[in-house]
Image (cartoon, rainbow, N blue to C red; front, top):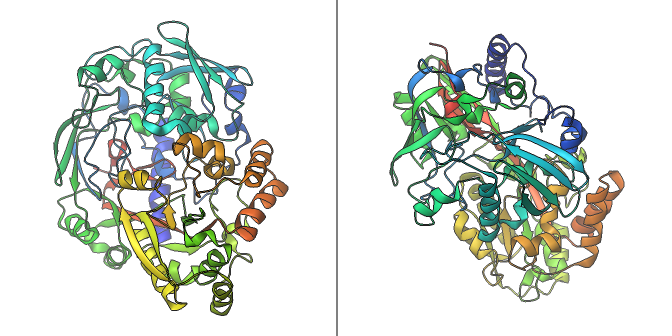
Length: 564
């Protein structure tokens, strides 16, 4: 029934889109005739399955960004699950499943793998490693400073300096050639999906504005986005208002708009209030009482309640989460998990189906480290021989290991779905005599502690990176780990053979190279293990059409449409 409701909502929104847009193009963005060259990843990308291609990314009113005579609604209120406590553009803060419309990127990638230019007027390929780029010359941030090519260079360098080099893994350097033009030089050609990730990871700011704010925008963020921060009360609320002078209103190139305009640039409402309500049950109560228009996530019990009581006028919507609940091991010699037999004992002790069933979210068991990638083998989702739950086999491997009763520490991001899964993992390992301590952490602490292998033995982490295996599996590649983890290998050791297998997969992703990497990583060495994929669930008042955006299907309230 949940799927039926979500499908009905998607179909209604699609009809609205077609009526308003006249079937506007969603082709990969670059100026013709360079579109095919500039975005080889999009050209090679298979279309996402229908259930993954979220129709609700389209708001139904593509002219809202250029509106001068009002908004679809004066205000929308969304209950969100996180309080990231900082708006610093180069920091990682967890605000829940919501898109904040303050900062912009050079480009974005939608859930169907299409590249959408944002700050870039054009991005044209010269050769395998060289791209000519041009900014719009009338981009101004909300304090009136003009964004130039030199600011792009500065922003990306600042992004790298803050420990995010892996986010622009293909970049060699930016060559500024004019006020609004630059050349993007790659170290190596882009792999599948990597254009969108490289252009879409760093927030781009005006250097002068950032320095005027004392080298930080933790509490006073200023970007080129469609909304401005009006107030923030920690633990309570965030309020943003539409920028009346938003620079994108001046774009008159309809062909460019048809290819590139994305819901993150919309201004369908004048004011957005985010109420910070970290308890899922309390968010559901606020929705039922009508004090909020939508929530960013809900637990399954509340979703079922709203489904069974349609007279309440609450519409649930599923939000598929692309990264699975997965973990990898600390394999350095100081950790008990350096023993491959202990690692295999742990994996055989886990019942993926039971854990998926036990989550307070819709979830399905999986059989591969990152099964939702476009090029992941089908059996990583449908099922295969994959450390199938077997207590006797788990105990046999445990007996062969050197485990002496040490307490293992599982570190994980403190969010509901992972919390629930980790508690079940702890109980399952206790059944075979493995002691476990849990170390929950927020995003900032997790990123700090992951570099200290004395703190953890297993890490539940969001293995993000893109829509293709090469973009995700590079997390286990020594060169990428050195760039993103200050010289530390993500699993605590350097494995030259795993590096070789990754490079073969990256250079030619096919059944053979994927199988070779997987056989070694999963079966022979047991470096990591995925349990299940899950979906958050959001909901909105009847008449409010909730719009989701990106691979994480974050709530995008500036693009909401309304039946009234």
